[in-house]
Length: 60
Image (cartoon, rainbow, N blue to C red; front, side, top):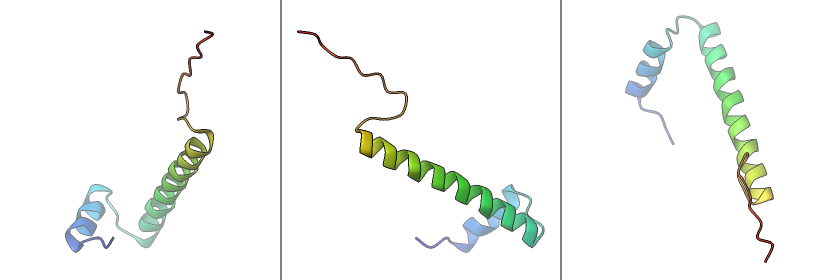
């Protein structure tokens, strides 16, 4: 999904990006967050429930 130029300008403005180092840091942090979310989603799928989800068993 391509990002519009206006969205890029907004990201630059909101994050006060003034150098390539700033851009690199933002991309690194974003990638870290995305990777964490993907790993958690994969684990939720493998286990069949979300993290911290309470499971109640009936003893009928």
